[in-house]
Length: 358
Image (cartoon, rainbow, N blue to C red; front, side, top):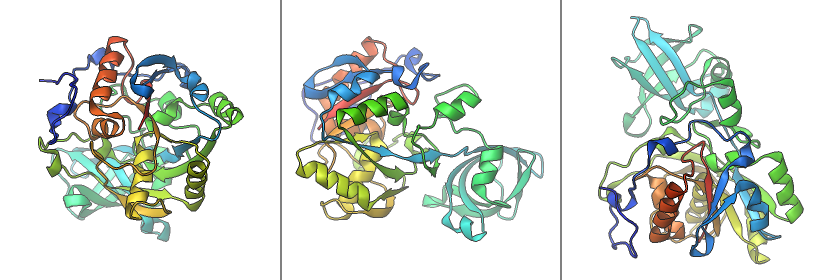
């Protein structure tokens, strides 16, 4: 049964500690009419204040720093068929670096009545054939495919927006626009950094006028972000791996902000994971880093970089519920979620957001 917010959490955390009952009607199926028209639950200072997202600039101070994830969502879902006629649905998890050298490799999840063998060809969108090279990825959970030409171009032309599994409608032209941030730059994500979907040009201009600085990281969000935690004992859970890049300019901006007494606000859990991963990989002091992260943040985590977090509302029993509880406190987060449900906030990728502090 879902838990009730408690005053304290046992020293050993279990999956049930991060459960809650969510009415299905609160799962947002469409974005707000305008990006910044969403609601914002201000959970700083241990309280719960109902606001609108456009209020965000006034909640920050001159000299604070917003760090965004500038990844770009690719049209990663492909529909096709095997030579035998059986249907295949592919979700490209990663475009491999060697594709630039002409090999055009990807790792993908494949759904089919019978998994294709190495050497088989899959016809996608009735437009091109991809060769199955074999199993790949963590625990051989993915398929290594070779496309006939640049995967990014083929996906853009023939793919579908990889909407999350809890969004039930087929992707539309509006999804192609709205399931993407206004500052998306580097293609590679199969899920949007959803806390950043609320920003529009007007809010960004208001933040600049307020004296709030901006920086960026890149973390290509993988489909593993939607995978449920199956281990009751959280110490046994293994996180999926994602590629990220924290550059020297962003590190310098954060160091300058900290030195001058400003606060670092991570826009979304993906940004937070990138920043804290870079600090962990450098032994605690933030340094530029490019590579993989499988960081699993649970209560008790020692945060080194992030002071504030802007984030959407997450699925019950998810690793992201554990992350926000680590930052803001389990009892407080559970109380905020109860308030959000009572006040009919909209949940998940197209839903509303909350502002938390460490």
